Image (cartoon, rainbow, N blue to C red; front, side, top):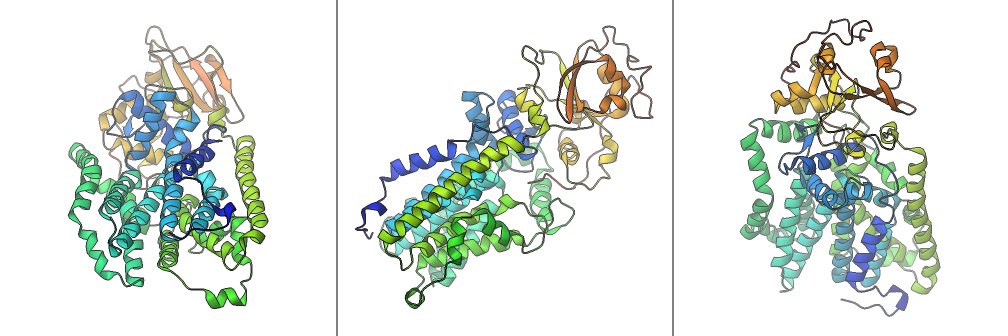
Length: 542
């Protein structure tokens, strides 16, 4: 390892640097409320896992939710077991993924490049607004990005260490372990993308013989022991799991249209350029003649370029694109930006510019959090019950023609809510939304779905019972359902309201008569209808 004589580039001890990284990423993770739909969805699934005690099956509103594997929910549920349902605990999986990516990048570059490149690359990464906000957003993208980063860097480090007769087996075992974590975080991409990066890097650097380590049996034993049991358990419990989780949620989503957020092939280029400012501006600074003449790419440089290209190209191929998909591209991009900043420049003259860019980036990170907190709070989050009011044991919650992901989290509900809609029509609706998520989940446990997903014409038999029901619906709903005028309005905001409906002490199935609901189908005092078996269709929005 080459030492730098310039004092201001001397990195602190790794343990202190890593502790500082996590402190920075956690500093504002508690500030803003959850955002719809992703944060509310994943936080509520994690909280439901904690309340139910079922740590194997992720559940959305009590129904098996197999869009993604359970690692995010395991971490979130474990955190909330200690803290209760608070925002920073719900976001802890993303913070851990970001911290792991930044720590792995620093340690890898410190060993295989220079302290100067390692330190600046890490600073660029954690002060990039895209990375910082991704670390504080409760969805699966940053967690799998961290797993991918650790897998790539550990595998590349193991290959290079083996060439130098240095210890390498521990590094490679770690790569397989993080590949297993990637599988449990977001499915096959946690394994496939690192494998693509390493394979292309080995080909580009003439290390094809090293690819035989892809068949290293101890590594596969680690991977299968860590990731295999959950997948086997789900397939044994739910025979249709493989078709839905692997075929629908991986291959059909990748190859088909009809999902949300369709964009052109070029989409991620402006995303990466715009969301990594002001650091990305250094790429536009012209290089000097001496710098161009002396430029020579090392194996580490090649790794970073291939890593960046694989992620961007892979996620540019499908029509459905979300911004967070390319978070795994940020560690190599941060390294390449750092090398661009340092190339051919004297450290003493560079310090003021680097310091100014770092402060501006950090301020922008915090400013984005403040802006989102002030101007992007969803109505579901603002709908809080008044002080002293809560859903009592034995009372039920029903969401009418809507599903608010955040409410089970903020109301700390321990039981699934009832959701009333025209569920028969959902089978023929191709849209990718909350209805499709719940309807698809119902196919794995039809009996539970029958009790949870309430057909609109069965609403009276659900509400006319000798217990109270808390009803959540659009604030304009009384115009369509006049019987809500007999319920007690408990909370309201700009778009959403909550009522407490006392029900019927005698179980009168006609307690809504005289103020019929919008549905033209008469209510009948029957048990909740079992929805038709859901078809294989679109999944969630992530």
